[in-house]
Length: 315
Image (spheres, rainbow, N blue to C red):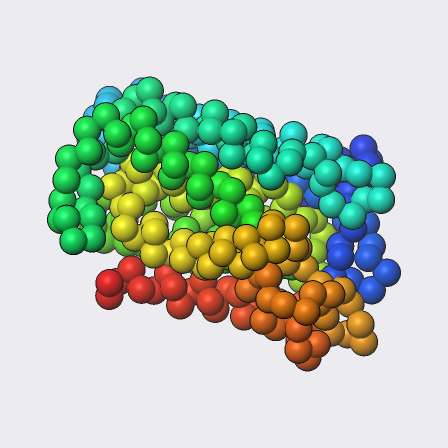
C-alpha cells in the first residue's frame, strides 16, 4: 500500500520539502493515508468476523462494545480526512502545508469527537487529584470526550518534522498503551492499539531515515484520535495522560512562540541546526547544539517517548 502511495503522490505532485536534508529534496507527503487504510481494514475485518462468525472463536465482544468500536473507527476516519484536507493545501514554495489556521484546527477536529459522543462511549466515573473518583455524568460525553479528541489530535500534530519521529514515537506510546490495556483486560483499547501499531509498523520502514514518504497531518491527527479512542473506550484516561506528557510539554514550548515556531531545523555539514535562539520545541534542545544528525535526534525523541510511556506501569 505505502509503495503504491509513494508512486501515486509523486505522480500527482503532492510533495513537500524534506526540511532537514541538504538541498531540501521533494518527498511525497500525507503518508498517513496508508496507515488509515491499514487501521480501517483491520478494525472493519474484526467487526465483520465478530458479527458473522460464532462468538466462541477468538476475542468476543458484545453488541454494545462492537457499536462503540465502530464509533471509535469512525472518529479515526473523520480526523484522518481532516488531516488529509490540510495536507492538500500546500503553498507554492512547497515548504509545508499552508492550510488550516491554528484556531481553525480545534474547531474542525471537533467533528471527530461526535461519533464517540453520540454513543456515550466510555465510563463516566473518573478519578481526580484530591477529589478521588467522581461520576461526572453527562459532562463526560459532552465535555471530556471532545476535549480529549481535539486536545490529543492537535497536540500530537505539533510535534514532528524529522524522518521517522512521529511514526517511531507513535509505535512506542500506542504499543505501550496497548500492552497496558491488554494486561488490565481492556480489550477494546488493546484491539485499537494493536491494529494501529501494526499499520504504523508497516509505514515506519518507508518513513524512517532517509524517508521515502512523510506522514503529514493525516497521520498525526490519526495518532491523536487513536490515542483518545483507546483512552475513552478502554477507560484508560490516566495512562493516556501519562504517555501524552511530551505533547503537553511541546504545547507549552510552542505557546512561548505564539505557535509560530517549527520543530525542524536546517542541514549544515551533516548536522541539524536551529534558527531560533530560544527553545520552542523539544527537538530544539538538540538542534541548538548543532552536534546531532537527524537520525540521532529522531532516536532521542523516541527514547523520550519510551521513558514517559514506561511510567504508566509505576504511577
